[in-house]
Image (cartoon, rainbow, N blue to C red; front, top):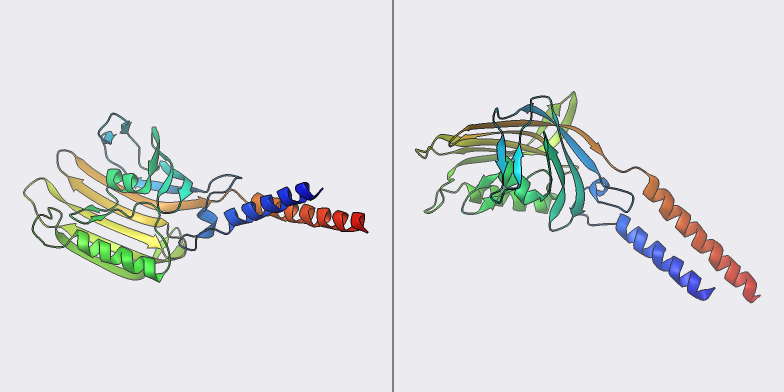
Length: 245
């Protein structure tokens, strides 16, 4: 009986530890044994031609305006990873790869790749802001130098107002195609990208506009399980005490 009690108390501790995860991220985004939160964006504008993903033959994606892009978060710590579905293409990717491939950031001498989800809290926002400005800094060797502006402001999407940190970047003319222009707005409560408008032309014209549609956590099942395990552990303790008497 004692070994059973220890086993269940350990399970309760581990399970509640999963729920009580890092304060750097919005709690409902944190993966749990019951499933992963899925974030959906409406694709307002998309490139006309298929866009290659990566350099090692992973494939290419093609989507139409009005399609839904989704990201099922599987890891949320130093590295954010998940299953990305965009148009006809699904891939397991980390947040940095998503930012680079979808041009949701600036590939400067100091890379700025906030991607789909950022850490929350003022210290994290300050670090993100510093990285954003460094990515566009006009220094020797930075081919993405340009103008970076950031602000805290409300962004309204679908009648809902989000308190956002906003980044607005415009690359200096380089002589190769059209300069990159990227606007990114992140909700300060959740850290989720709520609006993106990014464009660049090197060989083909690339233009992508995203707006948040929904954040779908796996539901309250996890809390019910934690509660049930806790109750069971209490019952076991009571039985042990009664038996000893």
